[in-house]
Each structure stands twice: as structure tokens, then as C-alpha cells.
Image (cartoon, rainbow, N blue to C red; front, side, top):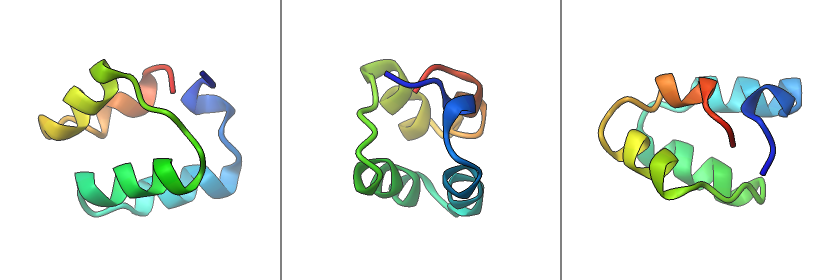
Length: 56
């Protein structure tokens, strides 16, 4: 899996523009990014901003 910091600048801006966890998950799916269970838990738990620093 790619590290979040290896996303393109366009992908990073799209992720930052997500208003909720559903949008972030949909973005990951549309970009072909597979999220780990830990990342999905972080997103679902409301700490999806902090998961930007985790491995994607």
C-alpha cells in the first residue's frame, strides 16, 4: 500500500476537501486505494484527519 504522503497533490487536495468519512472512503475507492481495517476504523471513528498521517 502506498503512503498517504505519496499521493499526488491532486489526490491530497481531494482528500482534504472531503467533508465526512463517507466522502473520504468513496474517494479512496475511486482512486483505487485499498484501506486497511485500522484506517477504516480511524475514519469511522471520526479521526479520519489523523489517518492522513498513517500508511495508505
